[in-house]
Image (cartoon, rainbow, N blue to C red; front, side):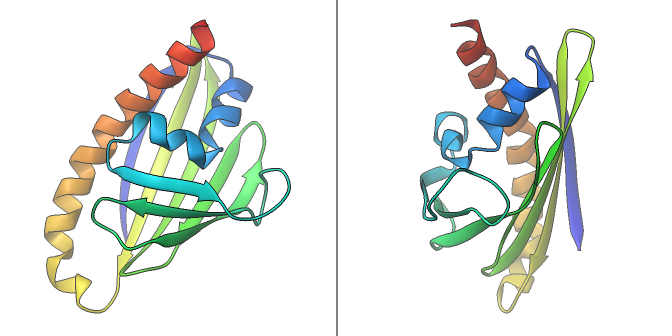
Length: 143
């Protein structure tokens, strides 16, 4: 288990951050590595909701919302060559909301061989994603 942790303070209320960020389809607006994502289950987003996603360097994967506690936290999980669980937590702060994200990656099969290279790239990408999502969300809230 390898965890990459990041946080960022966003100029909005926790419920605004939760509603935007827990709808994984919004990732298309701020994550340059994602190529497609669509909700594949019926009903509102919540525990058990599934999305089909494709990142630049991944096969198509099913990402499932395994925990969903508005407006404080949600957890997603996907399988594949790298099994990933991402835990998101929101805390109100002066001037907005702080998002804490823990990206927990477990390699499987042949991917164990290149996992150190993957981790180096992901640490950089996840750090940058914090800025990208903050900018996208603050633009949206300011409208």
